[in-house]
Length: 464
Ligand code: GLV
Ligand code: MN
Ligand code: MN
Image (cartoon, rainbow, N blue to C red; front, side, top):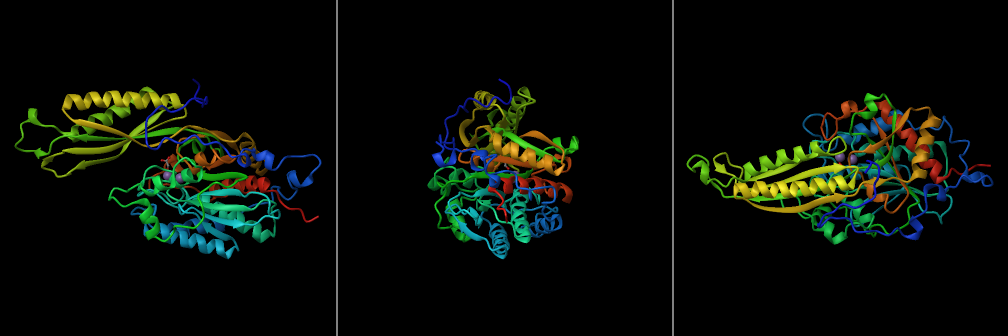
């Protein structure tokens, strides 16, 4: 199967496997169906104002990124603003105040997703949604997430400044808990919005300390009144840093994301026997830490065997009781396998289970598997993709098609609305690292492409 043949399904029994979602009739139209390029209706053609001169304010966008990054600083110049922490709440308040200053109405849903709305000229039309997330990894950068939210805000600021109206409303969205580092799985709240996860199931997810997602959302004061999802969205656009090296290496301004790879997060629990590290004879040890080490190597080998279109690593691990002179009695760790091909993900998953079970048997360990996160590879909407490409061409930026290696809220949104993503380069392809960096010019170029794609989809209202 070619890497972009996205037919088929991930094979796994699990708690987080996405439900099959039938797109409501109102959500099945393509980007073009909402804004057809009709010869007879000038309102739906590319508006003359949507020309090269329509640009966001690069300095203002950059300043907002820097101001947001002051909240939840990390220890090395990046951010630690994990979902549903006090810092997450502070970031939301700052975003709320910026939206209020632009005259947007804000509503928050029961998952804490924030929607800041600028009305369109036609109240019967569904919104064009644009955004990303403000939560970060524990050692996250300043741009993974915030660039997409604050570029959306910059679009609104630019429209307001220019006095331009659109036919569709535009809604900026800040999705709750995209990262999934504190509460797995990632893209949790957009998943509820798109109908792939149940609200109560999401509320019951817990962090490493046992805190419930629902309780923490309430504690930070961001449980909204609005129902989660179930409403028409004309289109969804997300701008994100690439988080890989392809754009920078090829000196390309813009990534036009056509597909995204899928993943399985497989959480393994090994059970051994705690005993003294000094006095227990080697042959009598039942060492859960040793099992974890061997399965970590196995996961690496499995991904390598499926290279280049597959990746895998153990990124989360805990051993208990984690004392230097106790042989670990328990290990809990999570393997992250990804590929654009669902059959490869399923194969890696099967190989991991078989190999890990054999390792556990040899070491005398108990073993238990849980699917802690899963999503299928996605293909974005061809008309929305074309709109991104056309915007990059119009603005004179070089561009190339990309498959997203990381997961994004746009993946779930593509199930319920025509969706596309735009990417900008990041230095050395580095992300999920406090040293993550982009240039102001890269941010501005990609925000301009977002601006044009969104405004063209929302339909600029003519003065004449
Ligand atoms: C989300 O950040 C992911 O892990 O891809
Ligand atoms: Mn992100
Ligand atoms: Mn991320």
